[in-house]
Image 1 (cartoon, helix red, strand yellow):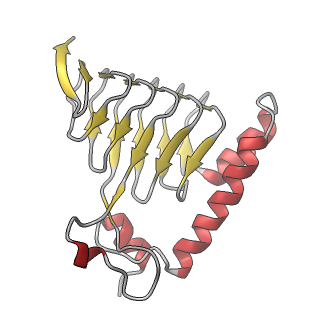
Image 2 (image 1 turned 90 degrees about the horizontal axis):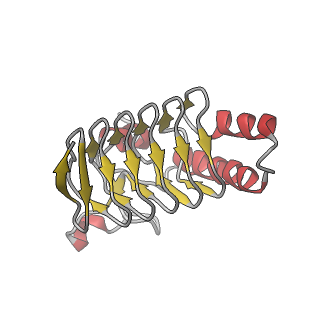
Image 3 (image 1 turned 135 degrees about the horizontal axis):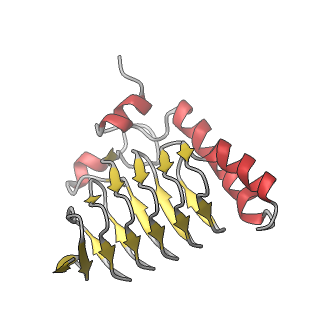
Amino acid sequence: MRTEKEKMLAGEAYDCADAELQARWHKAKRLQQAYNVTLSDDKEQISGLLDELIGSRGEDAWISAPFFVDYGENIHIGRNVEINMNCVFLDCNTITIGDYSGIGPGVHIYTVFHSTDPQERLPERSTFWKSLTAPVSIGRNVWIGGGSIILPGVTIGDEATIGAGSVVTKDIPARCIAVGNPCRVIKRI
């Protein structure tokens, strides 16, 4: 029998009130709170907290506080990545960010969603709706403009630029500029 965590990572309906998931969620909240009040020049403390909070990160990855996650452990960041302040990463599935990418302030990346059928999202025994997930993948040398929202299941190709305030609902190919709500390619580079 699959655990709720295995269902979550496989994109199947899962119960986020599961004890294992709740334990990690609460641990991530404690770690993110500590991270968000750590002085920005305390590199040793920052590094230690990130090692516990996120799944993996490359050399010279930088995340400006405050930074908010669901579980943290499903986030994988390449080297020389800069993530600006006030970002929210709902990592109920994997979020992968390639080397040399930049994430503007206030960017939200969601891997979790709910059925549009009201009966399907009702919980069986908890206050939390049934949830589904899909991974998000951001390529190498990508720039995501501030205030953008990346929805579940989206892949953004290498060297793409997403304009500020965009809502990315579908895959964006490599080497292009895309903007808007919904986000659309306006130029190939």
